[in-house]
Image (cartoon, rainbow, N blue to C red; front, side, top):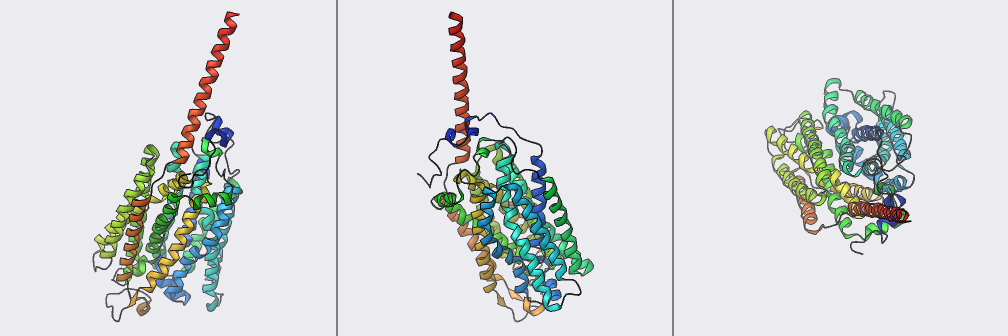
Length: 482
């Protein structure tokens, strides 16, 4: 079978729903489930990036180095990699409801433990380990949350709303990054209290935990919204993994888009450190991060609506990956310039506009090229790829920095330890982005298997209906003759 085709079964053989393609309906409560997932995704990403925009202040308060502060973000990737395989199995086997509730409780427990870690009665030597333990709990929740949008869109939303629903749920994650970039520097500058910052971020985690536990009553609607929803996770987990590993198109997407996720993780985690050495304050770095995300959400919204109407997943992804590479290359240049705030802001905005827009579309594309493998499995492996590459890229970029003998314009709070040259690392980051985009544009080709299955199911149902009508007419004519 071409590219490891997932199944030799005809659409009509896969499930009763494909044989009765007209018997579908949608429920208004799908929007509540989507809202809870958005809040949970947003809260978890706030936990992830809490410390990156105020890395210097965090290092000073916790009495640790900047590299150790970076590990408060990197731990998300380290923890997520082994857990991601379990999460994909949970979503495709145990269902959406249990996965979301477990994720909400882990997220709340992590946020509470971080608050405990900075209380005054905690010994100074124990503060960082306790905060790291809280981050680790929140990191356990991340794959449970971040794998869910594709599954939710497939199970609860009709074909013409799937990309939009996936976009809304997926973009709540960068919205959390936006809040962290904006409010972390603001709260620290106004209160100079890490404890206040962590308490404020713990409140939404508790609220969304309550909503998920009490409000989500079922993981799937009583009646599926589309033909493919009935066959979601039709392939066993292990068999699905094997099929994906034989799928050439999926493997290209796995590596290239995983690299893109890693680039964006590096940018979000290291932005403040890249800019402070050139004289840009943490507040300005927070503004750049905010523009990066705001424009990204706008781009994702527009592209999601476009793809829902046209179904041009591949074309949209390839074009945006190319534009993202150009924006990343521009950032590598302007980030090394002094007193160019407007230019740096513009490039960060364009980087987000083109880059973030790809995420929900690429996740839908992963399902289209791998159907009928479970949505959590196909999307989850891409996330795992992104996390593995993120760790490699962050370690690589930090290793490529060079300590500067003198940096009179630096505003890094950590002083000499933070006065590093990021010229080579940002150029390497741009090069990695360009290589990934070029490989994807040249080598990625696929058919949309889920859309084809649904079209075949609709044609089958239409033929069945027409056959029944013809049989009924023949029967009526025979009875009339008698």
